[in-house]
Amino acid sequence: MKGLILKLLKDTAPSYLSGEEIAGKLKISRTAVWKNIKSLQKSGYNVEGSPRLGYRLLEVPDLLYPAEISEGLKTRVIAKRPDLIHHFMEVDSTNNRLKELAEEGAPEGTVVIAEEQTGGKGRLGRTWISPRSKGIWLSVLLRPAKPLEEISVFTLLTAVAVARSIRNKFPGIVAGIKWPNDILIKGRKVCGILTELKAEADRLHYLITGIGLNFNSTDYDFPPELKGRATSILLENNGQLLHSRKELAGEILREMDVMYQKYLTSGSGEILLQWKTLNITLGREVTIQNLGETFSGKALDIDQCGALIVAGNDGKKKRFVAGEIITFGTGEAAH
Ligand code: BT5
Image (cartoon, rainbow, N blue to C red; front, side, top):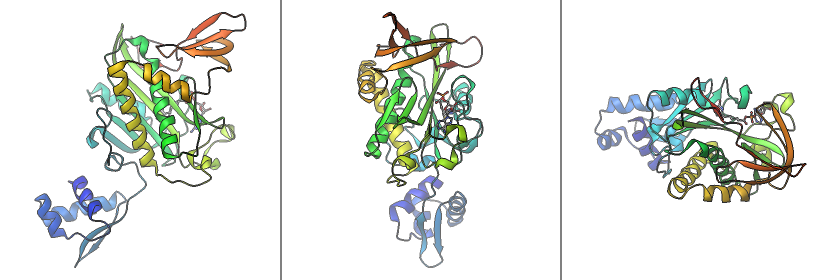
């Protein structure tokens, strides 16, 4: 009901809508209208009430509420309905929260989004700095009926979606993908992706892709050790933001949905093509640490499964599956 009232107020803004009209349109009592308006105000919506004229919406809060993100979002799977988006002011990690929902049977396309993470995770137990309302910290649940060896493709898919979304909304920013899971702008990390999965033998139960994107962080929001290595959309766009966090979050979900549909219907071809266009890894000297081993060489290509092909200094080629893919719990496949 709150969402419906919000929609009516948005459609009418900046004009007033009387309590009576709202009650009539939604077939609810005037008291119910009043209660829902109070609840909207509590959530940060600036709704002005006038005894004579009714209500009007003056300002929408800069929070990633489902009703805000899903506005105009025409997706087929990912966040296809507002109730598939779960918003929290604070969680330990959106990946962890979504894992709980997945275990309870949440449908494919469920999204968890938080204003702040107190235990944001990177790969291999590393920390992801996620201060309140400074970025887009979200996770997406997918349940693709695909073989486990194609799992790396999902990190590539997400990286493509994020890089494309940044370029779509902020054309002045050139975001590039560093294999497997970083989005960089002028050599600094703006976004990291963490893919986790649950599988048994070769059967995939579900896959959670977490995205951490610094949006309006300034240098003060990063700890000293990240100075010069991390950046944000705000910092890269000369301190200006033409689009809001919620618009970029919506764009990322939309781009992910489009790429996911293409993947389901015609395989990884399009994702790999897009990835190759947006990457800043191929052709470069790289050092990869995988399962305690360090390997240096030239990044040549990625294969159909999203693995990176590197030519060592001795000329021998080696194939690396995205080492960032971590599994949950015990008895589940490790990558
Ligand atoms: C990543 O790990 O880059 C994956 C980060 C994924 C974060 C998202 S947020 C939503 C979802 N929920 C979670 O709990 N996680 C996901 P990795 O490649 O291991 O990089 C981690 C390293 O990046 C750290 O050790 C720092 O050096 C650096 N780092 C930490 N916070 C950062 C930030 N906000 N911006 C840029 N770099 C950061």
